[in-house]
Every structure is written in C-alpha cells, then in structure tokens.
Amino acid sequence: MKLVRPGALLGAGLVAIALAEAANAGGLERDGYNIDLLYEPGFAAEATATYVLPERKLNNVVDTNPANGIGYDGMGGGAANGVKTTPGYWIPRIGFKAGIGESIDCLANYSEPWGVHSDPGLNWMGANDNIETKVNSHSYAATCSYRFQAGPGQLRFIGGLFYQQLDGFQERLVAPVPFLTGSNLFGNGIGRLNMSADGTGWRIGTAYEIPEIALRASLVYNSEVKLNEISGTLDLRQIPGFINPANPLLGKSTDVTGSAAMPQSLELRVQSGIAPDWLAFGSVKWVQWSKLQSVLFCSEATLATGPCTPSHRDTSLDLLYRDGWTVIGGVGHKFNDQWAGAVSLTWDRGTSTGLGYQTDSWTVATAAAYTPLPNVELRLAGALGIMTSGSSGKVVRDGIEYGREISYDFGNDTVAAFQAALKVKW
Image (cartoon, rainbow, N blue to C red; front, side, top):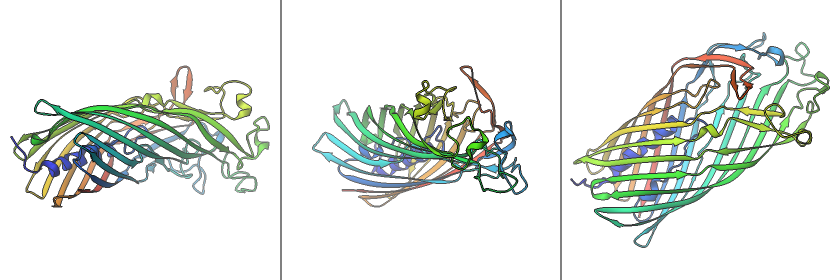
C-alpha cells in the first residue's frame, strides 16, 4: 500500500488533532505542546492561528458568604442565571524547522501553551469569588531529533528544551459594593492580585516512521516547569483600612510571592495509511494537572510569622485540579493531488473536582489541507463540542474548606473552534 503525496493527507490529520486538543483543553491548557513540524523533511516554516469560543454559562448562583459583597447590578445582588464567564480567545504558534545532514532535524518555535480568561464581571452574584481572572503564557522552545534506518522505516530519538514566561491577574470583590450607600469615596471594594513567573523545562521522546504508508508512532514526554518564585502584588487600595484595623494589608498594595509548577505531560500519537488515499490517526494524552491545587501567596510580613500554608496566607488561587486525559480518533482522505480532509472525535476528561466548571467534553473536528504548490500547504479546520453539565460549591480537601464564597450549576454548553495554518517548505 502506497499513498501518493501523503503530505497533505498527514497535514489534514495533524491539524484535526491540534484543533481538537485546543478546543478541549483542561486545566490552564491552551495550545499545549506541538512539535509536528519537526517531522517535515528538509526546511519548513509554519504559522498557525486558532480561535476558541467556549459558551459556558452559570446558573442558580448563590452567594454563600455575602459579608464581602454580593455583586452589583444597579439594585444590588447581580445576576444569578445565564452568567457567561468564558470569552473567546486567540492562540498563535509559529515555528521554523531545519534539516541538518541526513539524520538530524531541529525545530525552533514560539507558542502559548497555558492560559485562562474568566470574565463574568462585577454584576453577578459571585463577584466576591471572581470578577475577572486572566493568565497568559509565552513559550520559546528548541527541539532536535536524530533518526536512522531501522527495518522498513526510521527510528527517531527526540530531545529539547523550552523556556516559559507566565503572567496574569485576578480581581474579586472583598468588601460590599456600593460602599457607604453608593459612594466610592473610600474605594470600590475590589481587590486585585497581579502575578508573573518564569521557568524552564525539557522534553524527550521517540518516533518510528514509514513514510511510504504514512505511518508514524510517537511517544513524547514534556517535563514540568517549576515556577519557584511567582512574584506579584496584592492590591487592596480600594478597601479602606478602617473596615478591619487588624488587617495590615488593607488600603495599600503589598508585594507577595508564591510557588507552583506547570504540569508534566505524556502523549502517544499513532497514524497510518489504511487503504490507498485513506489515513487513520489517534492520540492519547495525559497531563498532570493534579500538581495545581491551591497556589498560595504570602507577603514578607506574613512569612515572618510562619510558613505560607492554606491557613496562614494572604490570598490564593484555589484550583483543586485532577489529572487530565484526552483521547482522539479520526480518519483522513486524499481527494486529489491538491485536497485532503479529515474528521475526528475527541473525549476530554474534565479537570474540576467539585470546584469550577471544567467537566468532560466531546468534540467533533473537521479539517482540510490544500496544496496549491508542492512546497506550500494551507490548512483549515473547525470544531464543535459539548461541555457537560455539573455544579460547583464547597469542597473539603485535607481538612481545608474551599469554595466557600459561592455555589452554582451549569448545563451542557457548547464550544467552537477554528484554525488556519500556512506551511512553506523548501
């Protein structure tokens, strides 16, 4: 069995997997890790843009701790149903690949593997839990491989390094609004946590390829990225100190620090021609999101009186994630020398454990690859998925209560995604 010009057919399958993973990302994942360009022969450059539009809405919101405010809609209280909390977002990725001699391939790429943006605003019942949370990331990676003949195909060993920068913030209501019966003379009651960090990681893997039948099986491990010092500020200047004279942080901005680790991951991918002009592909990915439970932040003054613990900290980002699993399967077909298409089905296990709204999801993705010239390939893909229903509220973990501010429910919501990629080879 031999596939004629399998490049476009492989491209359609790869873009279907990439888009499905982005649409189903759990934890803080956005684009994850992608080194597909490394397998391209010779020299190649690629630019990819992905847009994801999740439509998660929260209902039956109950403020279980109204002492620190209950949102504001002009009358007081805020919305309790139909609260949209997940705006759409773009994910860029660019890469350059060079073949060195007969056996060595190297890839340099920029991506945004992690991120989150939740923006329900002030006018809902859960403003004391979240007004807006946003995390951005930038990853700069270099990955190389060495390949040699092994039986009918080639065996490849892969290794690489990456450097990541993360930054973000969270705003939430920490005092009632409107303060003092409608006047903001002493502040609006909103606190803000700003944070930034960086770290390095590495990857190692192997792959076996038989290009004549479009077969490739790869297993790639990506290490965790330790963020040993997350620097930030806890800005409480909008909350006057006389509300609670015993709290020295009110009425000012204070430097705080924390620590965390972005998760390690392991991904198995398999694809092969199954008939002339037909391709089957699939992947299984594990991401250790359980590393992120509660990210604690403490000031120097707090650390001077004891270690930073859940019961002795200035603020925290409470996530309580469990490990993520993503399973993808699909087929592709080459229609002619210029056009190929693919369709895939994805199941992603949600990472939430009773706190938050990241539940299981199912997604169908379709992709097309167009090669107007032998060295130019355009890929387009779309995906539509269902995020399953659930609820969020108080959770007890290791004797500590989390999620005490609000509770809510959510139904089966949709997520859509679109991706365009341009690759040039020479």
